[in-house]
Amino acid sequence: MQLLPAGLPSPAAGGFTTRTGGVSTAPYLSLNLGLHVADDPDRVQTNRERAASAVGLPVEALVFAAQVHGPAVAVVEAAASGMAMSGVDGLVTTTPGLCLVVLAADCLPVLLADPAAGVVAAAHAGRAGLAAGVLQETVAAMVRLGATAAGTTAVLGPAACGRCYELPTSLADQVGMAVPGSRSTTRQGTAGVDLAQGAAGLLAAAGVARIRAVGGCTIEQPETFFSYRRDGITGRHGALVQLS
Ligand SMILES: [Zn+2]
Image 1 (cartoon, rainbow, N blue to C red):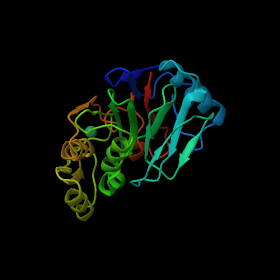
Image 2: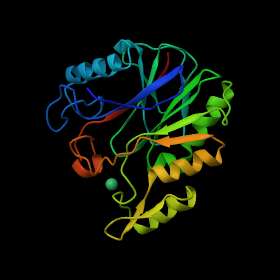
Image 3: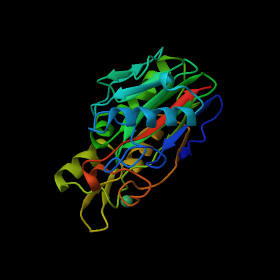
């Protein structure tokens, strides 16, 4: 399987899965990590084992967020097999050997690390979560655990790009007000949102010193990425981060 490396500073490590290298069949072909999309749970479990092994961990070390497109963040201290923290879109830990995972298919996954403080985080930032402040809340949760924004590196994963992500004009304007720089125009000339641009702006405003993006548009690259907006019923990629 393919893991796009996040390039986080050691001892933080992690990356972003693509749709390749798993065992699920269409429309979840093939590395679907989402249990909530009506895929065969045994296949999802095998896919999760492969993703865990790509970061050098057993599947029991993975901790998922049962995401709700909101701003809530959970501090994770221990992992249990298949554990999902309910009602949150951000996960933060200081515990080595467990792996935080957020899932997405068009929404923007963000991995964060302050290696000197020994704090890592993963956040799921779609249109709603971004506007609700999930990234600022994630940085704040890291700071409460001893991180500093200036010491933090953020890596933005693959997502629907601003030329593809179309929204009704009023909604795009609303998101643009809440998230400066996120309002875009699609290649059809209609109103849109640029999640990565918006996220980078919010993180910079929060004082995060280093922000980079792995790139990739989920809608434009059907061989590589799942896209909810393109396909409807589909799988989910994972963004994984750990302290090794
Ligand atoms: Zn695109």
